[in-house]
Image (cartoon, rainbow, N blue to C red; front, side, top):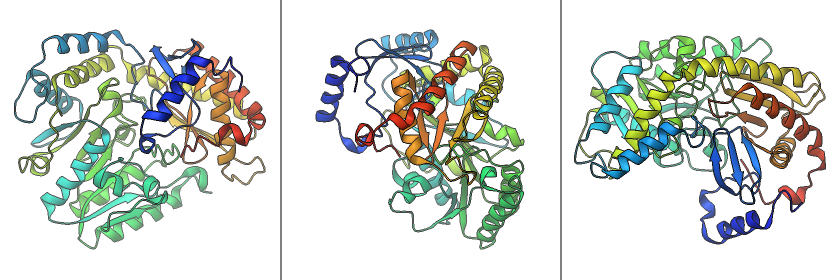
Length: 440
């Protein structure tokens, strides 16, 4: 590897990580060693700048070093009201809960669980549904991702397909994929909904959990009518629908919530990633009859702490005051237009899809078969890093493009230029270069 790409400072930092940080928590695609970030750009050890098309898997949705986030952290840290919301209340935990209730559609008596990550937000939602209903079965979807701990991990198709144990009371239904259907997905929607209905008709389902866009499973945008049909089935069966908006919600899909693309109002909504502005924060919004108790059923000492909740409130203010959902919708149209123009010249791009700034670029064998090309995806993201981009793949062969919501047109044009180079030069990447980076 060229020393210009991976200078001694970066190599040394990466080696220290290899020696000291647990491999069990690593998902690496290339040797990225970062020392700072600003806006949509990251700076590696050694000074090289890279355009961030991941936003740390959407967690840095407002970009790096946003002044409102910096101010919220500083002010809260100077005189914190304790270190958590477990056994005390403070203005920012209460205020964040109230503001989430205000921006999340719903009716009836509702409340908010505050946590550290989307994983625990989903885990708590699932366990609370079981506790409230007395039923055990969870219906989720193949290739879905809902968390890396507890029950949320055990119902995540991504983990299960990788060999992790599934919950014994889980049913994984098929998530409809228009790119893999011959009729724009209509038959796939019908088949998927029939699967779910058959489970609901048995009367033993505690809840259904779904991603409005299948993110880590391949950035799949479901066909129109899937989410609304799914919710209708849940309503008819009296079973709550949990909509996992952790990665794809809060402005990224061009609306405040991804489920608004189908005008549904899920019983339970979970949030994470962007809501913390880069800090650990998550939330679950749902009925008090499900989330209201019993006490101490979800114990995290520092959940709802004053620093993270102050930041969460700041994030919500920025999303609205800077009109980031609207900006994401406009930016996404421009970005996807550029990517589709690129696809006309590169047959390895089988599909470009998304809502707002949640975009998937599917890489395939260029023979008309639509066969997924995972080996190419591995090489493309590695070469993209060399070219000056941070982009990862999901679902085995899909480039996940989820930049900070503040990305501008010049940066998007730069990204497409560099992606073009990465795809064209990917065959030059050797197996030896990428063998240390397992990815998904």
